[in-house]
Image (tube, rainbow, N blue to C red; front, side):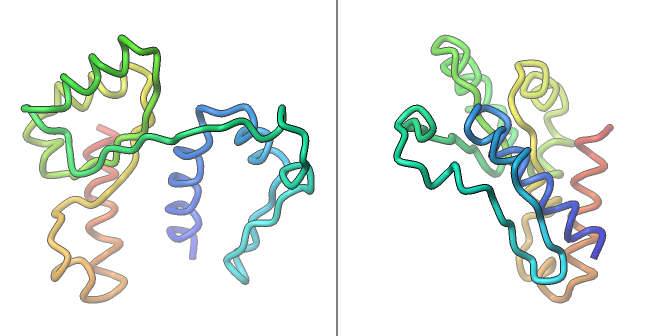
Length: 141
């Protein structure tokens, strides 16, 4: 259960890190691990436009990639935009400098998988968690 909460927290934080409304949601929300639900304060349902700005959350999966990631980072920097990058551990091992550039540029870095081998990781919960932990450790190091 602890790992499930951790996975939820990492994903939730990545989606909320760049938005005042989302940050307020984070501080005014609670997570119930028993029923796996998030409850929030009612201000998010308000009709006040200042509380509900139009937003887009950019995510990039399956990297870092030597061919595209630096180009993407450059475009994001030129436009003062932040995004979330969900990392594949094997590719991070192959491209550690690009992973560092993602992190150093202030982007959100999240765990995707280590192997990206869905037949392997979805065999059972333990194989998924092992793959998740492997990817997390690559990112952490």
